[in-house]
Amino acid sequence: MTATIGPKERSFPAIEFTDSEAGALEFPSSKSRTYSYYTPAKRRATMYEDVTVDVQPDPDRHLSQGWIYGFRDGPGGYPKEWTKAQSSNWHVFLDPNEEWDQTIFRNNSKVVHQVELCLSNAKRARVYDSWNSPWLKFIERNLGAWMHAENGLALHVFTAIQRSGPTNMINTAVAVNAAHKMRFAQDLALFNLDLSEATETFDGGAHRAVWQEAPEWQPTREVVERLTAVPDWCELLFATNIVFEQLIGSLFRSELVMQIAARNGDYITPTIVGTGEHDYDRDLSYTRNLFQLLTRDPEHGESNKALFGTWMEVWVPRCLAAARALQPIWSQPADKAVTFADSLDAATEKFRSLLESLGLDIPKELDK
Image (cartoon, rainbow, N blue to C red; front, top):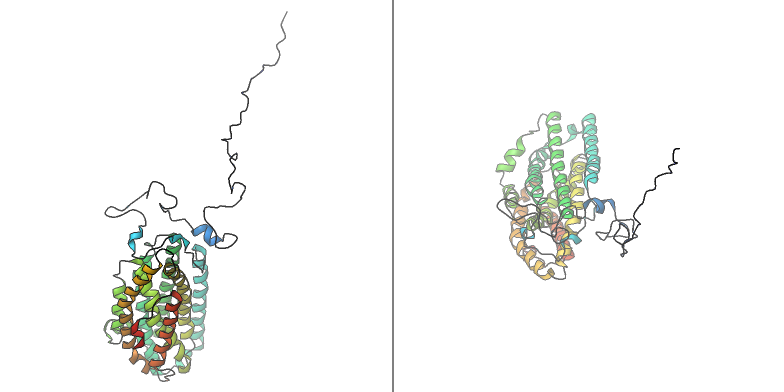
C-alpha cells in the first residue's frame, strides 16, 4: 500500500522591519521628486542649472577626501589660488544668459545663418560696386586688423580662462565667450574674402601688414599680446571684458564702424559688426554679474575692490593709450560722421557707468 505524500511545506523567515530599508528614513526633502543638492535661482530649476551647477567637482561641496586627480607639478583640480580675487562662495554665480551646450550651437547657428544670408544678398545685388574707394580702404585696413584682435582674444585669452575658473558655471560662460569671439573673427575673415573676390581694388591680405606694422594699431596689438601673458584668470577676464572691450573694442566697433558705415553707403558691415556687439552685450552681462558678486561679497568685498583698483592702475592707462593711438583712422572714411573726441567720450562714459554698477572708483586717467 502506497502512502499519500502531501505538498512539501517551505518555511520563510519572518520579515522584520529595522527602519534601515530604502525609503524608510524621513527627512525634510524625502518626499520631494526633484533634486535638492543646489538651490535654484527661481522657484523651479532650469535646464541650464540642471546641466551646469556642480558638474565640476569641488572638495568644499562634494569631495570629502579632496581632489580625485592632480597635476604632476602643481595642485589638484581647480584651485582657488589661480586668482587673487576671493569669494565666500564661488558657486553663487549663475550666468544670467543661461548658456549651456545646446544654447551655444543654437544661438551661433542663428548668427551664422544671418551673416551668410547678408553676404549672399550683397554679392547678388553687387552692392560693393557702389562703395567709395576711401571706405573700401578703411575696411581693408582696419576691419581686417580688428579680425586679429578678436581671434587673439578667442584663442589665447578666453579659451585659457575657461579651464581655470573654480566652478563649471564660470567656465561654461567663458567658454561661450570664446566661441563668440572665434565665430566673429571667422565672420570678418569671410567678409574679407568676399570683398577680395568681388572688388579688384580690394587687397584681402593688407590686414596682416596693418596689424603687424601700422603705427596706429601697434598699441592695441601690444595690449592684446600682454593680455595673453596674464596668469590670473580673474584679472584676465576683468582686463579684457571690463577694460579693453569698453575702451577699445566698443570704441572701434560701436562708436566708429556702426556710426559711419551707412553714411558711406555700406549697409552690410553694420550687420556683421553688429553680431559682434550683440555677443559682447551678452558676455558683458555675465561678467558684470560675476564682478558684482565679488565686490558685494560680505567677507571679501572690500579687499576685492582694492584688488580691482590695482588691476585698473595697470590696464586703464594701457587701453586708453591704445585707444588714442587709433585716432587717425577716424579721418580715413570719405564721410566722417563722428569725431574721435565724441566717440572716446561716449566710450569712456559707458565705462564709467559700468564701474559705478560694480561699486568701483573711477580711474583718474578718465578725467584727463
